[in-house]
Length: 447
Image 1 (cartoon, one colour):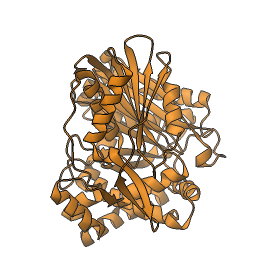
Image 2: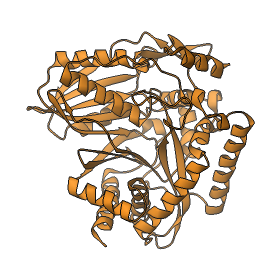
Image 3: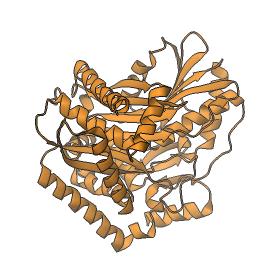
Image 4: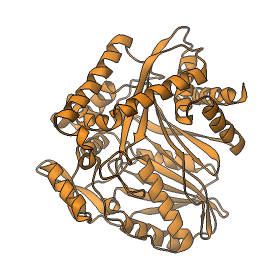
């Protein structure tokens, strides 16, 4: 019934006044009720700006994206999107150039009132000159990492040019776009194959290595933290060129460096099992395809699970990861993995337990060594009227382990390591992430 209703909305070409949350959206909504797992897009901008102009830009961008106008209403225990959210909140602060990190951490930890809405908010951080940061925080039910980047880009563009962007009308979720091969009995068989394959790997390899200083605190008591790092243009170009020469990708190199950094941090003397997870965009794999500017939750996941030795050559490991990712993509695992969210949700307790207990069980059931999200080279104009977009990246709060979110703009690779206290202590996290960055830098510089 739900798929029929959502499909009709897609055929009409207009976003509905309300629609039920899809399965993946419902999972994200419930998990966030137990422990905030917000996302935050961070835009570094140069150029004069006023509160009034930024306020206008937020208003026109909210009218552009249907989901920014939604709140989550609940009737008979069934959540659904309903129009009528108030204007996106805008907070303004004057801080030092590096003060945006603490504000991102605060935004990641601050829950949203989903029944009242809206599901996003902004902070304008000006640094006493023409350089400023825009933080766009949003509930994970609103969309994936790329969605946050698109909205932040639209806000900066509208503020810089004074032009209202055209309004969009598509808010059809992932589940209503699954290809025919992912539906019916064929889709069920594929999902069972993925699930059994993951279970077999886990039984064969054992519990994955987790880097943590203290795991006593439940998810809702953990504080999100952020450690950023930027590669300059020269090192970024060297990394891209070296990855191409080694017949692999930057994303695979990031995964390889993350795994090796964890092993060296643990002072491992033998191969240990690691589970490295990465997100893959499904925008071009769905039917109908997702528009280049549409906002929503349109990602699947891939898991790289095997024993890795601490002295494994990075580029050899990166090639193996790239090969496995290519095989998984050919086997349609990303689109098959998306509906598996609801199965894992039910295994974690689903509607039978409180949101906090659900989040605790979810974290335990989905224990992975680390995650990497790479948005790649962002293809967008950086000169936006009177403004210059200097950087644009994203991060997300996690309840366990850590996440490295990467993006490249203006020929520089930006890395945001998100982690949680007290799962990791600050000194430990700093040492771990510095090690990962050093491994990448060393691999690029050595022949």
